[in-house]
Image (cartoon, rainbow, N blue to C red; front, side, top):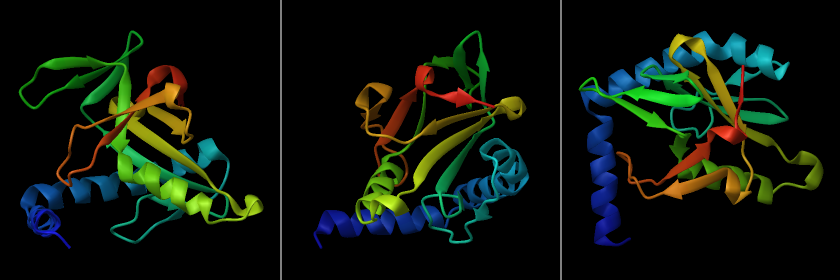
Length: 168
């Protein structure tokens, strides 16, 4: 392992020990519990909540995996996503994002499966006022772009255009 990788791993471990990470993690887990019924109703199936802290997807069953991204500072209005920043500014977006390793995981997961065992993978965004948007992962690049904006784990982001999302 190279020195850059070792430093990255230590930075990730340090971040995961911070108060910010714990608060965000707890907030996300609470949202998963509160949203499960809504998501099950939309997908018309029972889903298990993944109890693995490091899993790429929050819910699963034999046919699908679903990742919930809760965005309490983002709303959908006048055909735009409007995000309120920490300093109170409002920024308009035409996309919602998730971290790129989830896409890689889905691709690798299905690549190793026989055709009758392939799962569908969904990203669900829960916005302010409990509005949900969803996207079924696929590899049609006109539906998304990958940006190099790095998060705390040094991952790129998959930005999905709103025109390719559904809502419930």
